Length: 470
Image 1 (cartoon, rainbow, N blue to C red):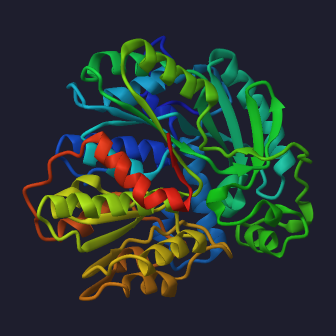
Image 2 (image 1 turned 60 degrees about the vertical axis):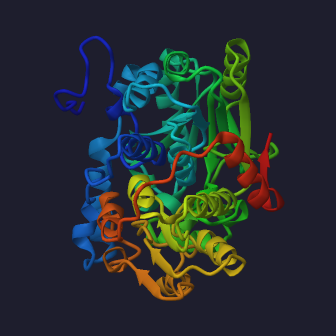
Image 3 (image 1 turned 90 degrees about the vertical axis):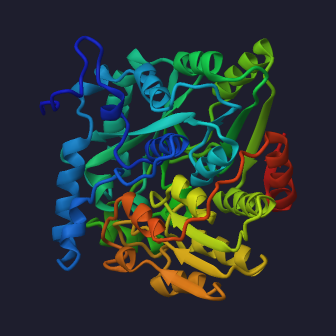
């Protein structure tokens, strides 16, 4: 068994939260970025360059091997499954926020726009789940059945000590590349509102402050493997459709070849049930717990459901433009962020309009293009494409990213550092901070938005495109 680094495990208390939650996962990055922004601090200390960044010019097998070694070092071992405590993870998220009273709180699915919305409202954001990776010795990217078998053993040990979790295992070589053959990816979703969250709401919310629950409404074919453990092949973030993970799919063969696999071995388990909520959905019990708590304590609750990430991103960008202009600013400068490349504090400090892409897939970038085509023009457009570290037929090419920047009337900027080695390198979150620090100051920052005004703006912009607010 690998030794755990000193300082990461509390004696007799299991693994610490920062050891359990996957490095670079969306929820982890968003909590860190939001907490920093509420302190008036940027993300200059966030993220580290992965090993593949040092192998941009080397053959694919060399890069894949380097990425696999790095992933295996930080993944949880089978023995550590019994040391995972979801309650400690919830407390770790909560403890990152300044101890003060807040005018509300956002809970739910991970989305970069949620961090920007939280800062505009002066609120924290807390996820309804978290991601983990588990070590898979002798794994193979092209054997989803074997991934399910290995994940089931890990899930059984983890769920024995965490009955309040639902574990969704995702085997997706299109979004994870070779890493899908050395680790299994698990999204832990709370089936009830964690105790740490209930204490946070009781101690940190102002009287009558609202609670907003953001929900990712996307669906995907899912296999219920066991009580509390489900499995899906592929994911919406891959930029592909469920049919693309069929053994006869040309796109799948391309994906497996680039990840070092072989399509001839691909035999996914049969899934006959109707599509269910994808991995970043909110468990009904979590939402029910939030509703029951707010009802008992006199706080209003609002649900914001999005059918695609771009729908919420566009609505929040429109909201920012309205908010900035109401404060006497131009609202005429756009930054297009991607994945982990975001910095909510620098966006507010510079008076920018943020649009967040979930990833670098063509589907994500096309959503930006459609939104820009229908929006009032921006004088400047800065684009930060996060290299995914993998090759896939679903990815946007650099010309498509350049087309986004071309919407700027005066300034059109595609970050050269992120473009260098795209799509196979890796770039830390702090790269977004470095780029945005170069933007001119536009102070003072606007006063926080009222929740009623924010919800009205979201309705105006997003209702016709699939954003549901209730």
